[in-house]
Amino acid sequence: MSIRNLMFDRGILSRYRVDVPVVSVGNISAGGTGKTPMTEFIAARLKGRGLRVAVLSRGYGRASSGYQVVSNGHQVCAELQSAGDEAALLAENLTGVIVAVDENRVRGAKRLVSEFGPEVIILDDGFQHRWLDRTIDLVLVRPDDILGNPRVLPAGYLRESLKGLQRADCIAIVGARDGAKYQATVSAVERITGKPVIGFSLRPRRLVRLVTGGAVHPEEVDGPCAAVSGIARPESFEQTLRELGMNVVRHTVFPDHYWYRPRDLRTLHSTARAAGAQWLVTTRKDAVRLASLEGLRDLDREVPFLVLEVSVAIDHGEEMLNQLLEQGTCR
Image (cartoon, rainbow, N blue to C red; front, side, top):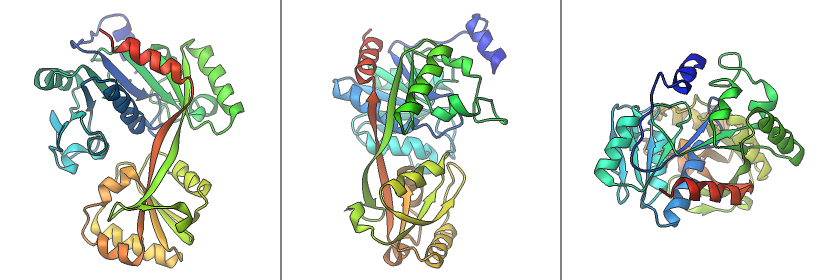
């Protein structure tokens, strides 16, 4: 990775520039920094300014390859397994925003520009994909990425050295649960990069029934719960549930981007009942992969399945982020 980055920095490998601004939302560690919620947040904010917005994702874990339109801005155009869970979730949540997937980001960006004429492209998980030039590089980090074990895979969680943060235009810190940790992370990032820093959190927005979509107030969830997740940092999900006052008696953890099968539902039902759980709770990303499984409604009648939805809240530097987006999307 270091040699590859050096070749881009020296111009030995060249980047392709499309005719519209490109905002990259990425990270430097192996998942769990809230890239998808932040991509959704920025897309909604830019759309709110009247811009025609497109999101381009790799479509990690999908059962297809090449360029594929997931949403044309008006309707979903691809099945879940062909789109990948994250792209499918973005397409579901972002009305009026074009969503496409392509592992070749240059090809995908070219196709988006020629087919839809967007005024800005948001590159989901784009920091290490340097073939496509970008106007803004927003990089998400957790305090532990900086203050904990700052080593690359497999010795640590990092995809590349922390020196790579020097390529970023802005660093966004997520998950600093107290002011002292946030300030320590800011100081460390500034020593490494000298770049602007903002802070954000993923806040619980609401609980909904997986089968019906109906809202459920946390106070209604008064019995023991069994958590289910297939995400990069499952401990954060469990901690959030406990902070909401839920009594989590079991947490079944699957690999990140795991494609659930009907037999998994039967196992979840059995383990939940054995643990005395009266509710099952999962993440929004997992819900996309669970919603269409055969047998879900039968399970839900016995042990109701809930989904925790979260949203991005900018805790520090919101004006700085607004200025960055304003400058970066005005060509």
